[in-house]
Image (cartoon, rainbow, N blue to C red; front, side, top):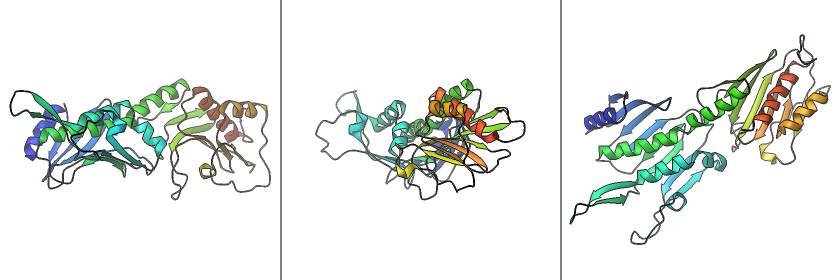
Length: 319
């Protein structure tokens, strides 16, 4: 059975690097410019797992909503079919876009022959549960899966879920190139920067993260960062009144002097409209609630971070 699974993987995914295991197979797949490492286990408990870039502790669990009797008609819509449990509703909403929902719905149906005529029936299969946890997309059921075709169906659905960060990286990369930044090849949440830009003598990076600390419950944020050069120790902390207290960044340590906001910095703050701004002794952080995709606001934040990073240093391009 596992040999048949390997053969089917190689047939369905051109160029796949497949290895046989005792209970299934591992595969490295190239799809839409991304590389996905997966593991398929058929018995004694069937599962399909696909690795993800860092997700900063994000968790999502999806199971089929079959609370009603099977004889009653049910909607084919996603919201009526799935029960969703997550620790980050904003990120879950991003993840479950149209492509993800369509792929999950398609994975639910399995064909069977009608005993009295040559008509293919589409039967609902509620045995599988989908999860995102520990930077892995996983589909699993309580018992074994005898069908290799069904394993491929579930792998395709898991790959659609796993490909969302690749799609986000492409979209964010377009925005970054418009701003003159170097975009990352993949979208990491709480990991490596998505954008890098050399602005004068300052290196500015853009990150998307969920947690400010280990105990933070999590909230999507966009963070523009820069290291300060030749700082005189001046600091400043600005937080929007609209941001909930739980989303505030750590309080900046007090200093002997406060960084003054000159005319251009004031203009950039008005353009960027950040949720919070922290200029510390050695770095600058400008934060936005959620994933920022506004070109003008992000560009203003990058310029402002670079301006404050080089304030007071030799060769400051903004003096």
